[in-house]
Length: 236
Length: 279
Image (cartoon, rainbow over all chains, first blue to last red):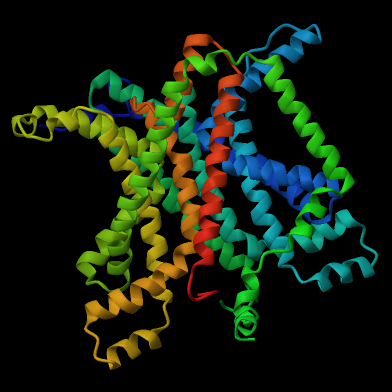
């Protein structure tokens, strides 16, 4: 059994270019979904901590359901049922059916899943901020939005960063699930390359190395961020 | 008097359930009643407006699929935990020759998506096997031609990788003094591991173990992509046969929520039985 390394070449006879394009798509979805998840998470965390009774209960339902149902099922559900629902609403409003962009749908799906997890991470981090600091901001007459931007968010980052790093790893790995709905990110591109050449083993190993590379580099980046965020704090 | 004293030991307060009256009272607050009514209305709307006639036709297959899901979960968790204990142990105490490969294995498993690992095993390794006549003639060949051993293997390895990392922390977190005390009592290293180190580490991981098992349950539907017909696979068949968009997927989501709920209750039951609270 010989390994044909030429299959990994970047230019067309090799399939390396397809894999790298898949990696770029994977990273686009992961970054987009992660940021969307963070936005949902910040809103969700503040809703859960300071919101009214109804919004608190609804957010509890959201986080519980998303965390209890497999990501794969959620992705298939949002991808197919979500687009169908959107098209029905469009039809009811008298517009033509739209074809949902795969990238946007992927980002939406990953974002909704990530949002539930980051809500919990950020809620824990916000609760770890000493209440006196927020009270001091109020005493200085800061409106809530300013106090959020200047005090609560910066002060909670050291507590949130390890949980957020974990979520980023989950986001990069969850993008692989979009392969199941036929979206060509890294894992699907790898399977296509393997299917065309029958060199499944080589391509899956190569893709594994790419994922691992992303994980290891992100680890370094998050470690650096954590060191910077924790500067001036006592060592744990 | 003695039982009362036992019940009010400081460490035990965490385990005391809130009184039943409070729990019912929390559900009877006006906004909750309205929310519950709205939820019930939505479910009723789902039941009435969607097509459920496929349900009796596929009932047998659904039960079989559910059984496969549960079986895969239990087998992969049990086998994976057996791998995870040595994986964690050698990283804490083993020689470097064993510790490095163990750490590398955990990094590899945790750094790549499970779907990729599964497809690597099924399409990659599985396609290499037929080239070797020795494997084709062996007694394992009938199993290697089926899909479920690859699914079980990759789920097991994945659980072992994640849990091995957790076990490493648990083993490292057992107070040194307890191990020294075991040593001072003349226990051999193996006895100390069996009687002191492993049980103490196990109590420490029990709360996280529950979370890991739920994550594992949520990983099991991936095996449907390599033609293992678990509950997700059955629902995929239903969707292809009937072209229904909503009902089968919502049903599937409810099934998984039920399974998660049962797991959560099991973990709570187990946690109450930990002899050392807060360990």
